[in-house]
Image (cartoon, rainbow, N blue to C red; front, side):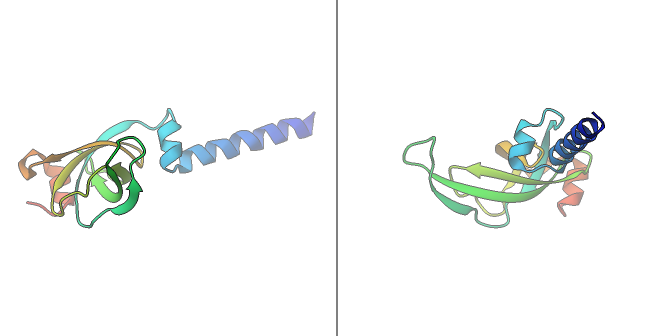
Length: 122
């Protein structure tokens, strides 16, 4: 009985650490990770992934960003898009942990001051 309790406790602790450590897929499924809005700048071309599985005749690109929310919190974000984004574009990205869910281009004056400072804009 004692071994069962210890084994169960270790299993629960392992699952907890796995969920907290995260990753894109874990962030997508973890109910403890909340969606937030982050701001970033496109600095590089995305990695071409080939044909998009959802939209016919579209290509898929993966981007890795460092984004900042309105409180200045930094977050690594991975997002897949169906077009190569314009370098130098300012983006507003809705992300759940590392998992980028949606994005839109914004003007620099639409970015909160704290995030703007973190991005090196004034």
